[in-house]
Length: 141
Ligand code: DQA
Image (cartoon, rainbow, N blue to C red; front, side, top):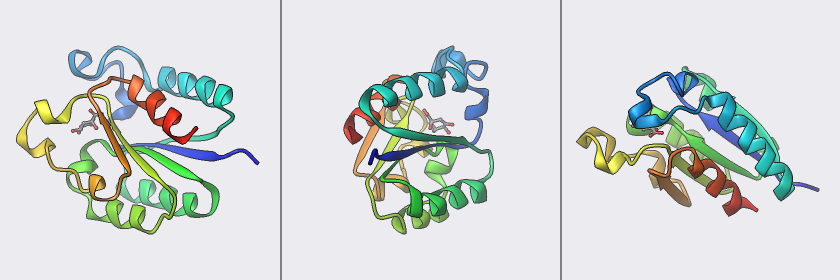
């Protein structure tokens, strides 16, 4: 049976490619999804790809993953730095979690240096651009 990996994206990532391209690059989230699906297929992984601007919707998806996923790749975007609720949801998920940031958050404003999600994540990837999602898939493969 192939593994299912949930790839979850937080607020404003629907604007990827249009939003601050000097920081986040010119690829859209649809481009990222397409590349993730192609790589996952070659690695024999099933993908559930999801983005929401709403904290509760992301939490609901993490709860769904408890029954359906063998791993989570999450870019919580700004909720990284604020959301105890997303941390709690991830703590209720039993398989590995990889946190991805497109930009190098440690090179940016001080408020981006702290991540609640990092308290839970097995691995953190930051600053590789959208390649970070591919590296996270390799981790699960
Ligand atoms: C981000 C970094 C966060 O600080 C920011 O709020 C984002 C995107 C990244 O992928 O680099 O929205 O998670």
